[in-house]
Image 1 (cartoon, rainbow, N blue to C red):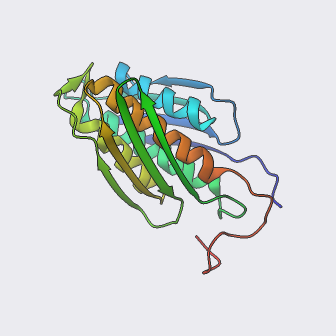
Image 2 (cartoon, one colour):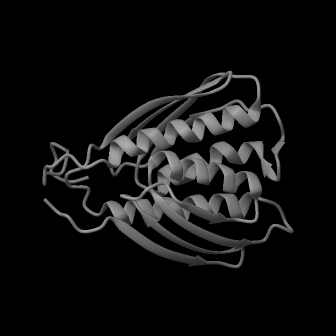
Image 3 (cartoon, rainbow, N blue to C red):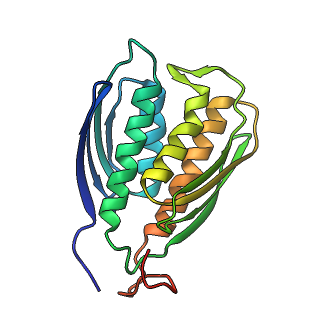
Amino acid sequence: MNTAPRRATLSRRTAETDITVELVLDGGGTAEVATGIGFLDHLLTALTKHARFDLQLRCRGDLHIDDHHTAEDCALVLGAALDQALGERAGIGRFGYAYAPLDEALARAVLDLSGRPHAEVRLDLRRPTLGALAGENVGHVLRSLAIAAQATLHVDLLRGENDHHRAEAAFKATALALRQAVATTGSDQVPSTKGVL
């Protein structure tokens, strides 16, 4: 069984964003996130805490335009770091699923670290913004994360009235599913009949 630390360090610089990410999969849930968007920091910190990763993420983005490039690119770099840290994905649980409540809100996430990128995210948020983050970008972050991580992710908001609660429950459910899926099983086998993921 491979006992090398599962970690990744990535940087991405474009005309729109400048991002650095350090991710440790077998961490303790410590997050240092600074995207320039408070609610995005809040969601990524919750994801890190409940997945039990360690994450340092710094972004300087073109927030004078809007939040889209920063939100999307942070998710893409984080997803790519997750993909890199998983390596060939031998000895992992691969699948994860979880429900997470936050007061009146309840979310479900189902995840397959399949190597096949696909995302279905149904949050139906009502508010146009949550802090400085556009409501439409909450789901977009989850979709972008899944695509870059080469994962299949389904997230559904089952109930809830408060959009802050709804969004946070979705990220917490995703985190719990990630924790299951990346967990090591003691095997050195790739969990696929194809032999690769």
